[in-house]
Amino acid sequence: MIVVTRLNGTRFAVNPDILERIHESPDTHLVTLDGAAYVVRESLAEVVELIANYRAGVLRRAHDLPAVTGYPLSLVRSPDAEEDPHSNHPNGR
Image (cartoon, rainbow, N blue to C red):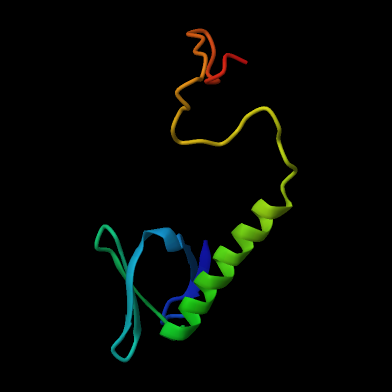
């Protein structure tokens, strides 16, 4: 989440993953995927920087997580994967 400021000075957090666009005219407008719009004090450049810092922080935290072995990440099962109907793990573990 990024924290931004409404024109009245109140602050709120917004999930940058749901932002469709950001534009200045001259106020900065955040428009979400569902069409909600928010006018904020931060400039377009500041909002973009907040989003970049947020994403960099997510990557840093992910990089710092301990490695887990035995459970490979995959969106597609390999053709040679053994299936156990009683297990949630594709290799039956």
